[in-house]
Image (tube, rainbow, N blue to C red; front, side, top):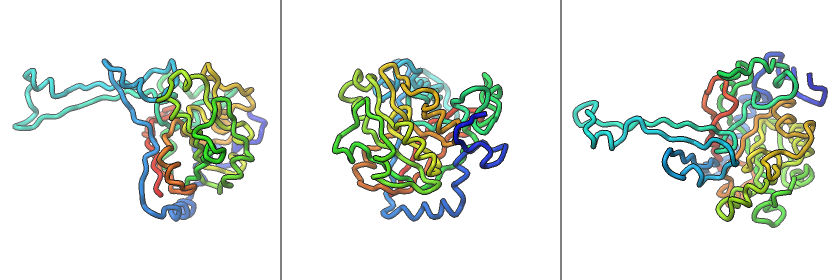
Length: 302
């Protein structure tokens, strides 16, 4: 059992959704008032999968992670080679996509993704995370997320194009931009994905992110989820690891202790250019039973 401040038991002993429980119908309806123009922006990176080309490597990702793979079980070449059409004048292409989302594309972490000791969030036994998936706190419990999004454009606040790799955003800087309401999705822009096109080596040299203090501040304000354009919400060193001690690790602090889902590797450049701090945030992960996360296409409705 964790002893630090946490949300264990707050939403009932069987809870597997954490602070997403704060998205009641009244909170969702209030969030919809944040849309003004009706313009819809995708906040997702593209998924470029292939088995015989460098396509997957052209999208920002952490080194050493299995990249997306895209296979075609039936394609135009099969018919050119003499495959029988499925009907008169009717042909079809059929594909399969394998995506290992953590560290490779825009995704949401489930509450079973990381833990400390022998218990997941809310005291669920970690032994229930098996080779075939997690029978507690899997991504299938998320459902649809509709909330007020609050953009924390940290580099713009500091007059930068992007944050430097060693930057850890303090709570005071977030508070200068906006104080979230209960049930908001805090969307943190570091600008780090733009570094990818300039230098892969620089992108892999580390990553900026939130400080542990900022994570505690967001949790104390009851955000429904925390999203960022970096790979781990918190910062990373050149080995792709968090430098903070375990008690300050943001995945443990937010996912494990507070039940706050994390959404990582967003593309926020168009949203930042729009100059809007508030918007409607919409996301729905795949219902992968027992999944530790899911690829995601979050939307911002302005």
